[in-house]
Structure formats: C-alpha cells, structure tokens
Length: 462
Image (cartoon, rainbow, N blue to C red; front, side, top):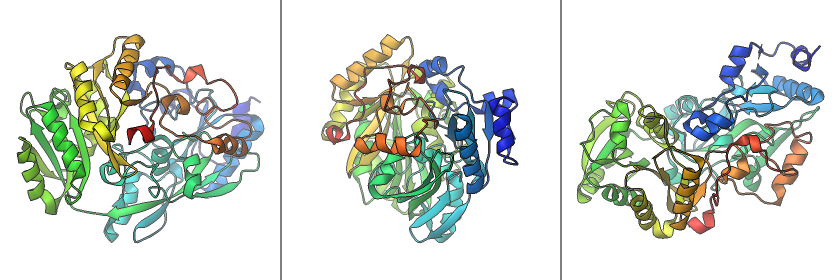
C-alpha cells in the first residue's frame, strides 16, 4: 500500500479526492498574476485533497499525515496572489472550507470557524449592524483564515490599518502538526506568530475578529485629468476622518480602459480613484472631489455599479487580474510608500516610469497613512523587474517580493526569535506547507524568484 492509500484508509470517512485532474486543478491559487511564479510553480501539485468537517476530523487528518510523513498544505478559498497555498512537496491539500460557520457573535466582535467565507461573516453580522473591519478584494470567495494566513490588508485598511496592527485580530485558535495534535489559543502578541505565515506553522481552527459599524456604502469613481491630482485627492480623502470611507484605490490612466468592465465610465486620459463612501457623507465627498479638479464619474449603491461586480473587486489584488485580461504581460511589485514623503515618493516613481500606469492602495499602519502599489509594467525579464525594485528603493520606497511564495523572501511579515521556536514546537517534523517558512535550513529555491527587495520596513515607512 502506498502512502496516499494508507493515508486515505487512516482518515476513514473524511471527504477525500485523489483523482489526479481534480487534485491538480485545486492545487492552484491566483499566482498566475506573476509571470515568474507561473514558471516556478507550474508543476507543483498536491497528491490528495481532504475536506474535514469537524475539529475531530482535522485532528485525524493531521495525525495520520504526521505518522506517514506526508506534507500538509492548509488552504481556504485559494485566492492568494503569490502561491501561498500551492504545495511545493506534494502531499495533502487540507481544504478548510468544510469547517465553516459562526461560533458566536456579540456587539463589536465575532468568532468564526476557519473555513467561513468572509462574505458569510458579514451576512451573519450585518443584521445586528456590524461588519468586518477589513476584508480582501476576494471577499466573496476567500475564507477568513485564508485571509489572515496569506493576506496583510484590504478594504477597510485606509481606516483600520493592516491586519498586523494591534487589535485587528483578537484571537486565533490553532492546531499543531503532530501525531497527537494539540489545540492552542493565541491572543495579544502571540497572534503575530500565525498571521501571514501561510499555514506553515499551525492550522487555524477559529478566528475572533473585531467588527465595525455597517454603513450604507456608495461606490464612487472619481476621475482626474492628471495622475498626481488623483494622488493628492486620494491622500487627502484617506486623511479626512470626518468622511466615513472604506476604500481609496488610485489607478492611473490607462487602467480605467484596461479594466474592460469599466468601459468608458471614466473620461479619456483621466486617472481614477475608486472609493467606498458612507451614504450620509456624499456631499462632503463630492465637494472634496471638486476642490481637487475632478468629477464623480460614477455613483452607485454597493454592488449595483455599471461594471457588473462589487467595486472592491476592481481594487487591491483583483485589479491586476482585470488588467491582465487586456494584456497578460502586465505585472509589478509591492512597494510601500512612506508616510513622511508620501506624495513626493509617488511622484518620483511616476516620473521614472511615465509610460507605466501606477496602481496604489491607501492604507494605514500604526495610525499613519501609507500607500501600497507599483507601476504596472509589461514583463520582459527578471532583470527588468530587479531594475524596477532598485529604482523604487532609490526613491525611498520599501519593496516586497510578490514573485516568491516564501514568507521570508516576500518580506512583509516581521520576525523575532519566537517565530523559529513556535515553528519547531507546533510542526516538529516540518510537514506544514514545507518550503514556505524556513528557519533551520537554506531557503527553498522552488518557492519563486529572488529579487533585490528590501522587504517592508514599517518603522522606516512611518
């Protein structure tokens, strides 16, 4: 009996897929937005998919895999952009979507099972007047634990900051990768051990999240004849705390045409700022647009815009997916533009790449406003991407490597001495998503491409 057959026998009636075609298809996430990851991860697949429905079944899966030495890659909705949930060593793909539902909720906080879709969290809390503070652009298809494991920020981050900011994740219950799996509750500083670790040091079981008041949101596209007008408007809007907002996404011309569903909503030659504004504040929003020389090109109720999908699906990680439908060569990096020279650093990078439209998401961390983004360039070579990284860093921008699926090489997560200890204690045989988070060996070359990135130095950016 081979190890996959032995594993299937050991887990009993836990739903299990071994059909090679189905396994290969579901071993993918959205890493295809990177031409370099398309090459690096093209032949990386699991060998079996399991979808446990209870914590007892999850423990049975982890125990059996540990006894047999099978790697386990936890997975939510499979919406990550740089291969976070793509197995590098085959083994078991642990599909957590069968372990879903609200555990409890009360005013301002909710606790849910790991496989709960982000949109279902809001569906449960909105009748009581609450919603998630932050959600990904993939809200309709991403799980809450997948977002915590692979993401860093999203819609709502222009107000509430990054997921790593204190208070944006209240607690995580996790399970160890051992023959006798243990359950551990993480709170306070310990949450950072698992956040943005790609499921490589523990399997998340439950997430306790803070909520924000649920407003009636308006989807607005503000258009400006000059890109830097759009930037200055976006920065001021993100600082106008009296205007309740949830999204400030800046996209330079010709992105409004490259995103096909946008059609001709935005006038020719205009850059756009995509915004989610609470309905009572629309007059103040329109006034601010006019003061910066722009127009409101579109104003719709949430989810009812003329572009056929929620506006947040044209921002953050989704935006490059839409742009690549016009030309799959478009790509970029993850630059973090610093608070102290936010508009200036954006302007300098724009001046270096005047033919490459810029994509920017305004977000906060530590109470300070930053911008995350990149020029959208047509990919030619790794050398071209290295030059882009070096040019942005020369202008004071911290750059993360979105063309690698190694936690360390990406450079968003901050580490201290506790991380290596936690990995060894929770995953002593190094079977959880191996190759993605390495402490006791050289970095795994299969995880993607090395670029001369500095990583995100949040203290420097502030």
